[in-house]
Image (cartoon, rainbow, N blue to C red; front, side):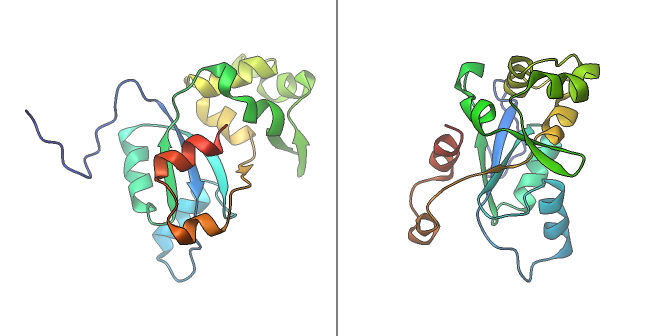
Length: 165
């Protein structure tokens, strides 16, 4: 038996997608933590983004772990109804719902994404254009109970699974 360190940077083969949720305020923290949270585009509390899992991204997430919770997203593309129903994109400094295929084709057509189903597939199975496609989407605003963090309700894995339904 080989023992794995608690903070090992091993990335499981079957997991390539993570969902990151900002859970805590970052007042009075180091500049590195502030920049990392800004890089993740998590400006507001209880906002979430999809991320590609690499050893470097796991190391980045470990830096901000006291302020975010994250977990591996394991589901079929049909389960990504949050993208279909609540997905928004920032186009010309305006937030636009991602329900119109012409908007998606206009902005992501050069990456081979021409409709909402292609967008969902690219998020569920991250490919070489995942960073561009993920940055096209605005962070998801989650409507989670503000009291749950104070009471220590559930584990991080449970938060992530509930958030992406």
